[in-house]
Image 1 (cartoon, rainbow, N blue to C red):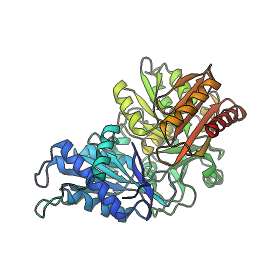
Image 2: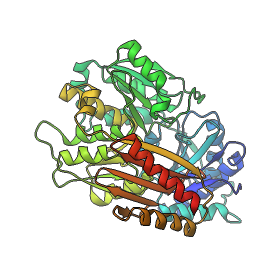
Image 3: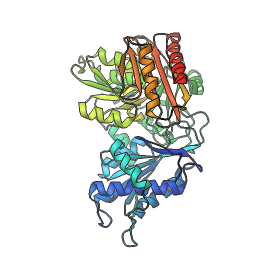
Length: 472
C-alpha cells in the first residue's frame, strides 16, 4: 500500500493512480469487510446473513466505477455480500445502510477534493461514519500481513438496489419542519449547479417534486468538474450569473457527493456556505407557533460561523461545538439529543431523518424557511449581524503533535484574553470573533480560519496565525 494515503476519521483518500489504486481500494475494502463482519456477528456464515451485508455507492468521479468494482471484490473476498446502490449522494448510502440493516457501507467519493482525487469513506451499521476507535481497527487490519479470505464456497454475493434515491427523497419530503405545500405555492425559480457530480442524479428530481421551476448548469453525472468542486463563493460565479439571467429566487450549489449545499441570493451573490446551517436552524426552530428551541441543543464544529450561534440563540437554543469532522458532530448530536446540527461548510445534519450531512435536507429546509416567512434570501441575511470569514492554508512543515503544541502555546500567549478550546487544534474565541488553527485531516496542510465583524480584523488574526506557525 502507498505510504502517502491521507487516513483520517473520514476514511482514506489519495491521488488516483498514485496513492489510490484498485489494489489499495480492494485491500481497504477487505479490511473494512473483516471489521464489519466481526462487529455484526457475520462469522463464517453464508450469504444473506445480516452481519455480512455491506452497501457500496459512489459519486460521479471518473475513477468511481473502477474503484467500486475493486471495493466490491475486496468485500466479496472476505465473505461480505454487497448491496450496490450505484451512483448516488453520500447521504443516500448512509440511509441505505440503515434501511437494509447492513453491517456497514463504503462510499467511493473524495467529496470536495479536486478531480484527481478519490477516497473510501466508511459507514458503520448505524449509518454514521466510523469513530476513531473503529477507524483505527480498520487501519490495523489493512496494514496486517493477511486477512481472513473466504474460500470458494463462502465468497460474498452482489445485489443491486435501484430504489435508494427514491426512498431518500420520499423521506425528505415528509420531514418535520418541511412545508411542502408552502414551497409549492411559492413556485420558486431555482438556479442549480451540481458541478457534474452525483447531484445531477437527485437534486433536479427533488426540486421538481417541490414544484420549483429549475434552470440548471453542470447536471451531467460524468465527474468532469468544470470548476473547482467545493461550493465556496469564489467557485459560484457561473451560478450567480445564471440567477441573474433567469431572474431566479435562489441559487443552489452542491458538492460532488451532495452532502454540502451553498446558497446564492436572488441578486446572484453567494452568501457563504455557513448560512446554509443558519437558515436550516431557523426553519426547524422558528416556526410560527413561537418556536421550540428553548432548552434544546444545536451542534456545530469548531470552524462554524457565528451566524449559526446567532440563529440558535434567537430561538433559545444552546450551541455546542465539536471537533471538525462529520463523525464527531454526529456523535455529539446523538449524545445531546440535539434538534439539529451540522458544519459551516454547508453540511446540515437533521436527526429527524438521520445524523449525516444531507444537501437534499438542507435544500428543503432553506426553501421551507423562505416560503413560510414569505421572504427573500437577502432578507434573511440582512436580519442578523454580518461577519467575514477568512480561510488560509500553510504547508504542514510541522509534522508532529509536539511541535504543533508549540504553535498553540505561542498563540495562547499572544492572545491571553481569548477563551481557548483544544478539542481539535486550537480555537481562540472572543464575543464577536475567533481563530481556529488545526492540521487538516484530508490534506497535508495546516488550516487557519478566522471570523470577525470585518475582513480586516479577520485577516489580522490569520496573519498572526501564519507568523506563529512559521516561527515554530
